[in-house]
Length: 164
Image 1 (cartoon, one colour):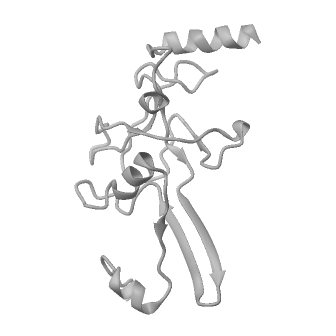
Image 2 (cartoon, helix red, strand yellow; image 1 turned 30 degrees about the vertical axis):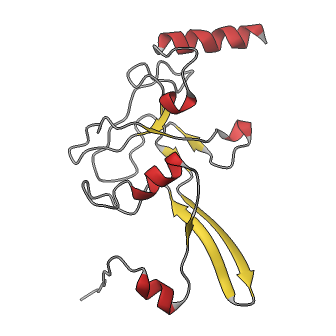
């Protein structure tokens, strides 16, 4: 209703966001530097909350730090909104991370998938933002490999874990 529309405009104004801003300028993911500070590279992100019924469901959780690595967050305007004035938008830090579609064929499984937060947490690695950027620029999935031959041909690194 008009009251909800007025409240939405008020929140956008309080956050310093233009009412005609593109969603990709307001809704973003941003990785942290090794010291936990913001990189300053805001990557546009599609998706919605559960209430909208979106496939790529995300959220903004202030203080969300599901890792031992230092990670920055932006404080929300208040307890009733997830919009941040400091971020001038929504800093997405929780949501769809592993997406996979499999087709079981007579020739074996064929699949496409993506690890939306990328393959590496090592800042500066070629794989620090690889799949994040791919998904942001053109939401798509990558080929998945199932045969020993395909896996060997596409192995980037191998790590052997041992209890010794």
